[in-house]
Amino acid sequence: MSATTPTQRSREWLTAWDPENEASWDKALAWKTLWITTFTLTMAFVAWFLPSAIVPKLNALGYSFSKEQLYWLAAIPGLSGGLLRIVWMTLPPIVGTRKMVALTTGLLFFPVLGWGVRVQSPTAPYWELLVLAFLAGIGGGAFSGFMPSTSYFFPRRLQGTALGLQAGIGNFGVSLVQLLTPWLVGFGMIGFLGASQQIKVAGKPNATVWYQNAAFFYIPFIILGAILAWTMLKSVPVKANIRQQFDIFRTPDTWWMTLLYVMTFGTFSGLSAQFGLLMTNLYGTGNSAIVKGTGATAQMLVAGYSVPDAAKYVFLGPLVGAGARVLFSPLTDRMGGARWTVVSGLGLVGSIIYTIGALVPDTSSAAALQSGFSRFLWGMLAIFLFAGIGNASTFKQMPMIFERRQAGGVIGWTAAIAAFGPFLFGVGLTLMSPTTFYWIGVAFALMCIVITWMRYARPGAPKPS
Image 1: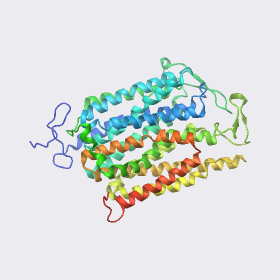
Image 2: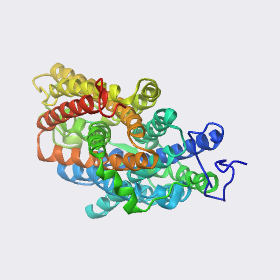
Image 3: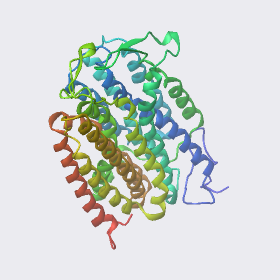
Image 4: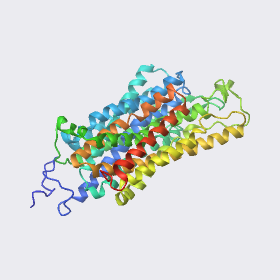
């Protein structure tokens, strides 16, 4: 039997692994690894973005936080996710795929349980919710370990597809939590999960909800994912200590690709976390020019205008972005990633500029408000679409630019920095107007287009990818 045959393995570690050798590559093991880690990554994204589905409703459930406090609560998972990704990016060559995926998935249990408990009554101190928001970032940190370890299992010719499927389906966890939350909270699932709450929204009758369902529903799936990972996954013999892994920082392409992934995934994750709050503050009850007062005393200042329920729209952005990542990944394998990164950048510039026109709502009439909201919604969905395309294309570029172990490290590092998106968007929207913040986004995207064209996409580029 060949020394590279992957069937020669211990209970956890493969003794040899060369996916570029078609004769010895264990295709079944590679795809089994992909589907298990994709399922657990989806649960990780659920845990990471669970606060984004709950935070906009905290005041309606009886808390009394300021707009800035709510922005910070929604931003903290992005901060912790980015910090923890720097840790998780080093784990695949040290602890292996099996232990890393199983133990990480098990850790998701704690923040999800905590949000389910603390959302049931408005008694938790602000600092405690900040801690829960920080722990939710474990789900964000997982990405920088899961994706590099999966890349070890596939040949370069399939890495765009494999990583696109894992990241794209994993990204669906964002839409999943935001789509299912309004439905899950509408009925009592099981009595022992807790009592109901009253939700009070300006201009609407009070409603009975069970917001703990938004968290508790996922706990059995998280436990199942941890068990599957522990019992069925293997680890590839790619070994490197932390010092050896840091050789990626000696090449400028690591830094260029970091900027490009910030443009794409930073935008996707940042807007996914802030979409609901931004919509509420511009076109909903957070805009004092539209609604004055709270509860039964609320007065609609713009006659005939129907305030949109952010919960009915917020899942659409992440859904579009994740879908684009899945659908365009095979195209990047066929055509190369750099071309699609240029397309992504150009699309982001155009869609951001289009959306800027709707960031200052015209409150002169209901028709003007409705028109502005439609432009805002379609512009945001276009931003998500082009960010998703770029998420697929950049992950095709990295395995083409770097050798296997370095490519895994660069994927983990760029993902770590881009995971600060929710934090940066939260801070940016707190410190400056949405219009100013979006114009900064236009300038950043233009810079990334130039980098991609000159370094990777033009004829005769130094690193065609």
